[in-house]
Image (cartoon, rainbow, N blue to C red; front, side):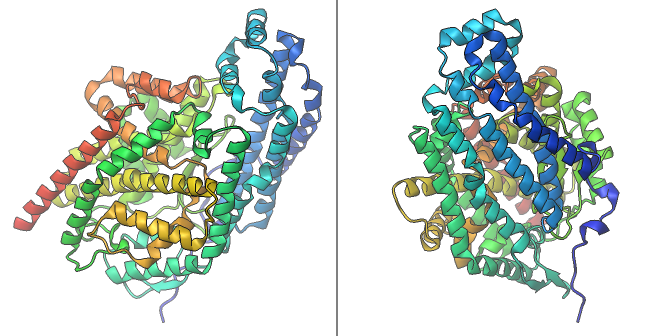
Length: 606
């Protein structure tokens, strides 16, 4: 019997491959000191409550107090969640994260009076304060966002109740996360060479790209056999989460949870509907790609476990982490020296947690606060996809770095709507670089295949998720019970619509809703699709229009939340209230699908 491959423990991972969290707090004791200091500072919250009517100076003092405690809280929360994510089975950091989450709820409750109290003042009084107190000038847009939202802010006592219930509202998501990342035990399957492989979230994605169909099928069925066992539990956590969204939207007098989620960034709901409409109109392109995949894989039936493996067999290119770092720097050269300097800093000064270890949170992300580095979590495997993930997350981190170093704390973050544009612009730049520099037809075909798969996963698939997410919220609002049977049947029908007749509808895929963390994020996923499409337009401008386009792009990265997202993007050169950028992205997908079909024909003839 061959030995089962095991992930390293956290302690077995080389320090150079881990992020350096001592730059946030030198150790846990320093965290505890800051934690206690913030708890003490929160006791002064009541001294500011009721003072906004006392003139411009008092108004300024209250704003600065609220922003100060929020800033300190973010640093504590980020440290605790990064520590927890690096090993979710570590009970010490489970407890640290739980305490930080509790402090977050306490802080929210302690400062929840600000918005409702501010809105007891008339517009004349508020803007009069800005004439009276020059130091308020920096906060004009921040205050305007609150004033513009008057209709949806509750009286102070009700806001305090909602804030105090923050942990309760977050419980379904936390339960899903612990179950999905720490408690689920996935089966062991036999790999391509007969070795035993323990399934994990990261390894599952790698195995679905295997050229051995038996391995793909075993991984697919093995993973979903576990979700099948817990389908009712996952339906319960997801249903409770959606009910929380709908409840909060209702009490705040929004027409829907979607309106509530998009209103904070002043994103018109039409942006969402236009996305779903344009993607649905172009589903024949996805069906055509699935038909090409079926033909090239030479299978009688195309299954869901066949949609991620490269069409042309074994990957002709792969990258170790060190090689990927070198390639990323080369590819991102069109972004200019100012941008590249930050990229190099990230690679050399341990901003990145590279290696998958036991208990580590799955996937990849960029995270941080105004007073921390923009850290990156990876679960590295030597694939082209991981190179794309690396430059994707680097896009987020450079965006965060530029924002925090060019904006004051009050505008030192950016909306999710803007976030995915920065990351996927990098992906588009990388694709162009690879197609320009690789001459081997097999490599070029592989890159085109990767682009089409990426587009499928980021635009088509995330729009499918967005359509399902909205469907769940609407059905819950109508009183429909979100049982596992109802969710599975509905998801299966939607999956069939998206992928078309070339694909067999495996029964397991009906359970995909149960394992998607983003369904807990409250209308998050549509922004992957809009972001990728806008990024396609911006990457084209950077590569073809030169310095002015790059300057506009860098200004977007530095803008933070100093203006509404739609306006920031208009200044960068893309109007996302219109369908043009989505239709242009579909044209690029069709162009590269044509290229791949022609290249495959050439390879077959040779």
